[in-house]
Amino acid sequence: MEMELELEMEMELEMEMELEMELEMELEMEYSIDIYIMKTAKFIELFINFLIGGIGVVGASILGNFLSPLAGAIFWAYPNNLLPSLFFMRQNKKDDLYLAKFLESITFGSLLLGTTTFAMSHFIRNSPEGSSLWLSIGKATLVYLVCVLILYLVIRLGGFYSLFE
Picture 1: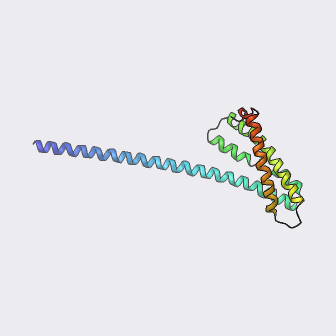
Picture 2: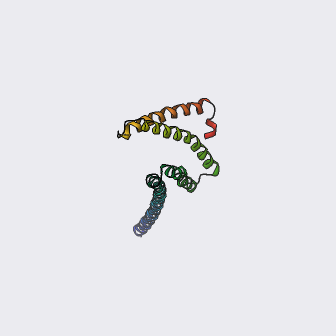
């Protein structure tokens, strides 16, 4: 009788453990599916951002090539690459203050963009006709890196870093 009781208790305990394991597996599976869905959603959001940015580049290239350099530049100047970034940040629960700081930082980045673009234009204009663009791009990249260092030091040492926090 005692053996039967022990055997019965052992079976009940075994069944409880099996149920717990099944529940844990179900929860792990649901959790894994949720993570997969979130990662997939993030990938789709990033892919859409990539498409929007690509459309801007293609549009500027087509207008600049077939209409005029000015038309391409005007189209390119619209911050279409900024919009997907803003929406992506918003979807990731960034508040308005964070977005505003990001946009203010972009304004300072625009100084670098303008300087680098002007330098690239200068180097291309003054290079021998038909020479590789890579040399001019490399020189402009060096100008960019020097300007980044200068801007960073001015922001850090000038006490402006609080504008970016």
